[in-house]
Length: 376
Image: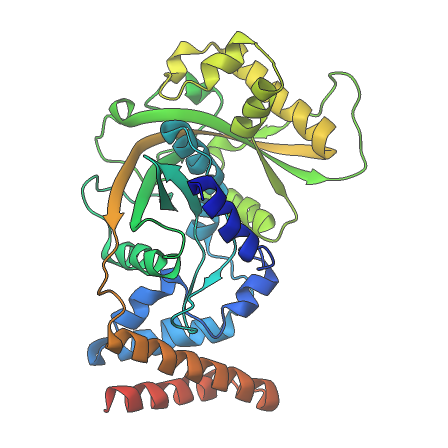
C-alpha cells in the first residue's frame, strides 16, 4: 500500500465523523479530552486545583457549544493560509479530518490540523497562528508539545511517528501597507518592539469577508469593500464574532490564485504572487488592486457572495519544528486521570440536564470530585 493510499484509507475509515468546530463536533468532545486539553490534565496538582476546576472543567461543561474566543478565531481564520504556505514549502497536499477517537483510550481524541507526506513519510501537521505572541524558533511551548504528542499516539495507525509543528506570525495591514515589507497594524498586534520585520518576511495575501445573498452584480461593477487593515480592536472583534457565528464567510486570495493557475491562467501577476518569499515591494499598487479585484470577482461569481471587507495580511517568522513521538507519553497516571475526569464530566452533564443546576452547584461538585482524586 502506498503512503497516499494509506492516508485515503484512514480518511475513508473516519469519513462520517463531524467536521471540526461544528455543533456535532463539540457535542462529541464533551466526554473526551482533545489534544489541546491534555496539558490541563497533565498539569493538575494541589496548587492549581481552583484553576483546574473553574477555568477548565467547568468551562468544558458550560461551553459545550462553540464559545467565541478572539485569539482562537484569529488562528482559525489564518489556518487556511498557513496550510497553503506549508503545502507550497513541502510540495505536498495536506488532508484534514474530524476529531479522531483514540482506540486505546476512549476518553481521548484528537483533531489534526492536517496529514501529509514529507520525505516519503506520513506526518502530522500542527499549525499555530498567534495574534501577538513572538515565536521562539527553537522551542515549542510545553502545552503545545503535549498536544502534538497526544496526536502522534491517537493517529499512530497512519502517522510515521513524526509531526511538524508549524507557526507563523500573521499581521493585518492595509492594501497600501503591502508596498512596504515592514509595515502593519502594530497597535492591533501589540508589537512595539524594535524588530526588523522585513528580515522575518515570508509572504502576503488577502482575505475577503463576505455574506451570501441573492444580489448578483454584472460586468465589473462590484461594490466597494472596506479595507479593514487599520480597523480597531473593537471593530475586529465584531467582525470575527460574525465570522464565528457564520453570518460572514471568508474567501482567500491564495485559493483563488491557485484555482486560476490550475485552470491554465498564465497571468504574470498570478505567477509572481505564488512565489513565496517574493517581497511585497516587488508589486505595484496597480498589481495589488488587480489581485484584490480577482478575489472580489471570484466571490461574486463563484459563491454569489456580497463582498464586505478586505483583510490584507503579511506573514512573518514562519517556523517549523520537528517533533518525534514520545512512546512513554501516555503513562498509567495520565490514562487514569483522563478516564476519571471524563467520567465525572459526563456524570455532571447528565445531572445538570435532569436538575438544571446553577454555576455554584456544578463547581462545588467538580471541586468535590477533584479533591477526592487528589486525596485532599
